[in-house]
Figure 1 (cartoon, rainbow, N blue to C red):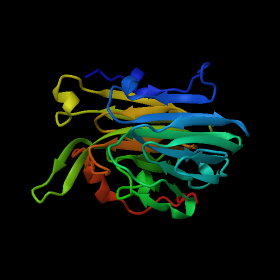
Figure 2: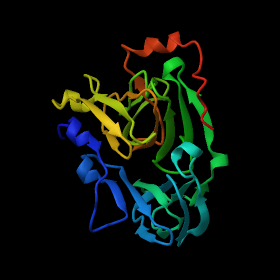
Figure 3: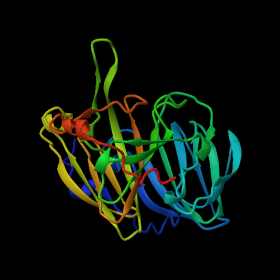
Length: 296
C-alpha cells in the first residue's frame, strides 16, 4: 500500500526522448495498482506505432486525427476524423490478448491506448460514433453528457470506457461516489465494484482547467489500513488523475468545457458504485437539465 497525495495522483504530460510519440504514461507499477495501463500518443501523418497486447485486452480511442490499424486479428482504416474531442463521439477499437498490431496515422493526431490483464478471449471489434449511446446525467449545474464507448455489458472482460463532457461551472461525478470494494446485496445483485479509474482531461479552450478531489472514508480499504486520501488536483488540458480508491467529484471552471475519458477496470465489467451518503440528497433537488447539453 502507498500514501496517495496530490503530487502522485496528478499525472502531467511530459517529453519522453526515448519514445517521441509518447505524451503521457500510467503503468501499474507507477500507479500502485493492479490493472490499468494508460498512454496518450501523438503521431504525425504517415508515422506508425507497433505494439503487442500480450496477456492483456486493449482499447484504442482516437482523441484527434485519423488512423489505420493492421493486426493479426484484422485491419481497419479511416478510424477517427474528429479534430478534437469536442467535435463528436470517438471511434474506439477493442483488441483481445495475443494481438500484434500497428497504428499508422492517416492524418496527424493524438490517441489513447489502455490495457489490462485478462484470462479471457474476445473478438476484436470497432466501435463507431453512430454506435455510441449518448445521454445526459444529473441535473441543473450537475448536468453532464455521457458517451458510452465500452459500457457494462460489452463483449469484453474488464475494460469500461466512457467519455464525459461537463460545461463550465458544472459539477461532474457528483454527488461524490466511490467503487473500491466488491459488494453484493442479499439477492446477489452487485451494489459496488472494486475498480481502478483514470480520468484523462481535455479542456476547451485549452487554457482552462478543472478541479478534482479524491478522498476516502472509513468504508475504503486504504483508509482503514491507515492510508487515507484527501487530495485536490488542478487538472489542465492533457493531464490525467488517478482514482485508486475513494470518492472523486469534478468541477469545470466557468467559461470552459471539460472533457474526460474515463477508463475503469477491476473486479467486474461494471460501473456499480455508492454515493457519499452526506451528499446524495442533492439528486432530489434537480429541476431540469442544463440546456447547453448535449454538445452533439
